[in-house]
Image 1 (tube, rainbow, N blue to C red):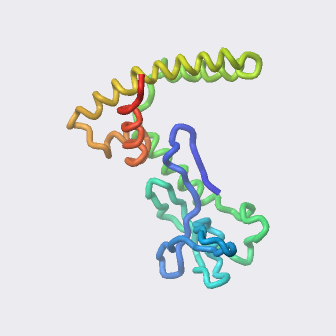
Image 2: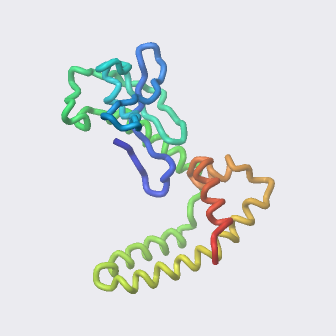
Length: 193
């Protein structure tokens, strides 16, 4: 189970767990058979103490950016339905992650309202057209791609040529992790017109 918010793709949230000693366990590796690949899992419910797995005692919110919630919530393993782990109440960690995302959004640069409105209307109009006139939507997507190919690299050159903007600040203003911001800048730097 993961949580996402539109516009903040690199801030995927989920339930993290802590062991009785307060440490955060590493991934659990589960041998699925005779394959040479042994997959790892970090879903909160795999830390149930079964088959030599660590047993989590509490849960908290976590984010792909590295954020961890300060509040913890006890796990009552007697109440966890192994056939429907999503039925267990994880609303506390999810609310905390939501507050984290609110803070991320507050630090991010807002789009000017006229631009945000224009993008919203464009999205709505393309949604109206896609079923009845998909070729028009394909044509519009090509036009949008051409616009992005001009302005994405131009803006990226301006951003990266400024020694005033360290990557951490760029990531914060864009509302994404440093890794995602770096990837986005590299994408625009090498975009073909």
